[in-house]
Length: 124
Image 1 (cartoon, rainbow, N blue to C red):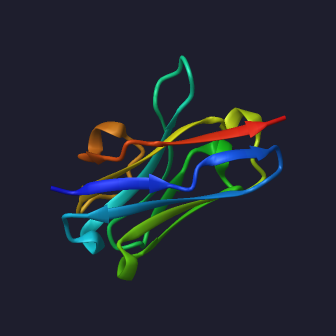
Image 2 (cartoon, rainbow, N blue to C red):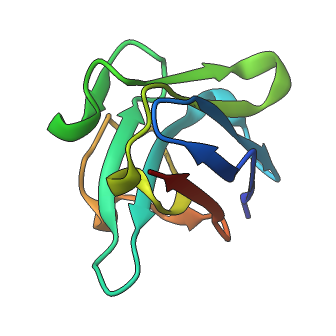
């Protein structure tokens, strides 16, 4: 059973940057596709970014392209989401998700393992 723990959330002013981390345990990290999703109050959880299991493919939702970067460090069993030029509309709880041998899927249903989430608040 894979466990995921997010960290790095917080409060930042618009235009600032935050880096999120997702530490994985209980599985073979290098075989995991990793995704980041977010959920704002009163809204459904939505896709943000994903990387396939071998790191060769990434996907981003249009609203974060050019601002967010997903990456991974297999030696540290950790995935990252670097968020730059943050906007108030990026405010949400951010979740990392994983699935074995996965693609850089944008679909929530493709991911089997989920973290508990970390709050990101961007003030205007």
